[in-house]
Amino acid sequence: MNTAAKKILNIALKIVTWLLVAFTVFMMIFTVVTVTTVDRNDRSIFGVKFYIVQTDSMSLSENNKDMDVHFNAGDIVIIKNVDDPRALQAGDVIAFMSTNSVSYGETVTHMIREVKKTEDGKVLGYVTYGTNTGTDDEALVEPEYVLGAYSGKLPGVGNFFAFVKSTPGYIVCILVP
Image 1 (cartoon, helix red, strand yellow):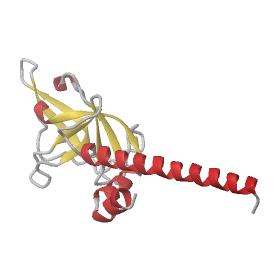
Image 2 (cartoon, rainbow, N blue to C red):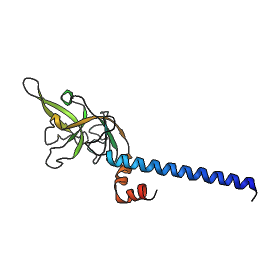
Image 3 (cartoon, rainbow, N blue to C red):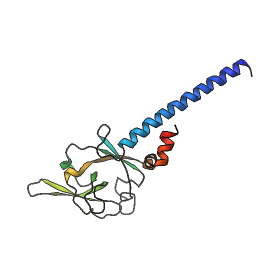
Image 4 (cartoon, rainbow, N blue to C red):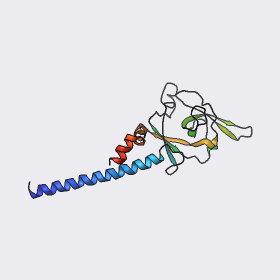
C-alpha cells in the first residue's frame, strides 16, 4: 500500500474512532439524564416532566375520535407545570397522582370531565376519565395532586426508555459503550 493510501486510511480510522467516542459519550449522558428524569414526579427539566404511558385509556377509538388528544401505551407524554391547578377546566388533560384504590400513588394522565366546586366557587377537585373508556376515575382529583397539564407526546419513545431502564438496556446503553 502506498503512502497516500495509508494516510487516507489513518485519517478515516481517526474520524470513525472520534465519532464512536462522541456517540458513546452522548448515549451515556442521554441515558443518565433520562433514567433520572423520566417518570419522576420530583424532577423536571425547565418545568417540563416526561411520563411513559402505561395503558391505552387515552388512545384513539370510536369513543373519542372527535377529540384532539390521543396517546397510546409506550408513548411519552410531555407535562408542563401549571401555575394554579385550581384554574384548570373541563376538557384539559392533566397528569396527577392517583388516589384510586387500584392505582394509588401512580401517575395518571386523563382528561377533566367536570370541575367540582363549593357554593362559594372554591375548587374541590376534578372528575377525570380516560377518553377511550369513557369511565370516570374512582376518586376526585384534588388540586394538590395535579402534577401538570398535557403539552404534547413523543409517539413510541417510551418503549425505548422502558428498555433503557431495564437491566439489558442498562448493559447495552451504559456498560457496553
